[in-house]
Amino acid sequence: MSINHIRPWRHIERRKSRQIHVGNVPVGGDAPIAVQTMTNTPTTDVAATVAQVQAAAEAGADIVRVSVPDEASSRALKEIVRESPVPIVADIHFHYKRGIEAAEAGAACLRINPGNIGDEKRVAEVIRAAKDHNCSIRIGVNAGSLEKHLLEKYGEPCPEAMVESGLDHIRILQDHDFNEFKISVKASDVFMSAAAYQQLAEATDAPIHLGITEAGGFVSGTIKSAIGLGQLLWMGIGDTLRVSLSADPVEEVKVGFEILKSLGLRHRGVNIISCPSCARQGFDVIKTVEALEKRLEHVKTPMSLSIIGCVVNGPGEALMTDVGFTGGGAGSGMVYLAGKASHKMSNAQMVDHIVEEVEKKAAQLDAETAAAE
Image (cartoon, rainbow, N blue to C red; front, side, top):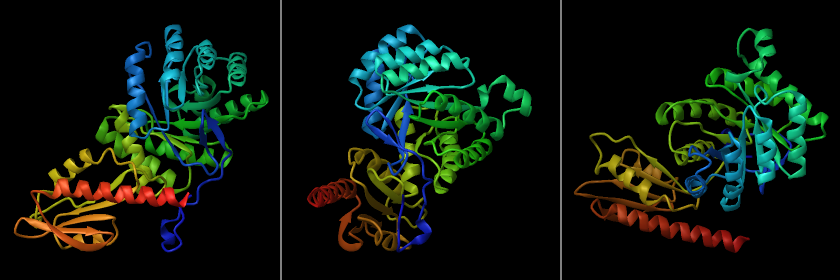
């Protein structure tokens, strides 16, 4: 829950859901909203897949999903799970036996799609394997693979059909005394996804995994996801999320965190506040921000940095950030620390100097946190 008594307009009341676990990661209840991504390497290439999982984890991923399309992938999954720094979700489609094999291989969660996993008897076998191996399950409803009877009933994919599919599958899990599940109702259409998730949130107390599926490339997919997931998160809906991009999984993690950071729901790393730049800029804002984003990727401490090209908004923005730099004249600008003007710095040395100030502030914040524990 994001609480700010001074600024009540920033308050988000999160939906109350049951809490489950995906490995050692709590999902739902009062747990932080978890960020997920998915590998796109061949699962049978263990080295490449583990490298991608580790890169995603380093970027902040709490959970990583891996596709398990065949028996060879099931065998590889065991090695991947053993070497992964985060819990692994096994993505299961079409063949229920892959779900059983994934549970046996040590997957922390099984993602199954009601539209293509098979009849209830097969689902029951997957549930039994999940119970036996302490696995949770994600019911992954997708508008593109709804059950035939629901398409006949509703005429086309729609929010009502997606929610009915999800609730039908919840009933199957609960009929088998299984409650360690979360659920998603994804579509590539932002309107359909948002409507389905809102209906789902009212119909169940299960943890909800958010996503706009097949959102597109980096730019278009980021925009779609920010609109769709952003409004749902603002409404308090969502316990985990994945930003689905035709891009490097690390980029999915970064975008997911930026969405959460913009709403004050997760805090990790440096939040850079920067202007779009104009003719008034005292230095090249765009190149400076690009350089700082790369140079500060290693900083995990939550903190803020303002990089503003001129004095119109620079001092005001700096009042609200841990470290700030505002462009001035004669090839230099003003460095702000803890909201106050501190000292001047030349544009030529500003990037190195700002990195140094951010690292120093991060160390101070980390020490204060450690002392308070």
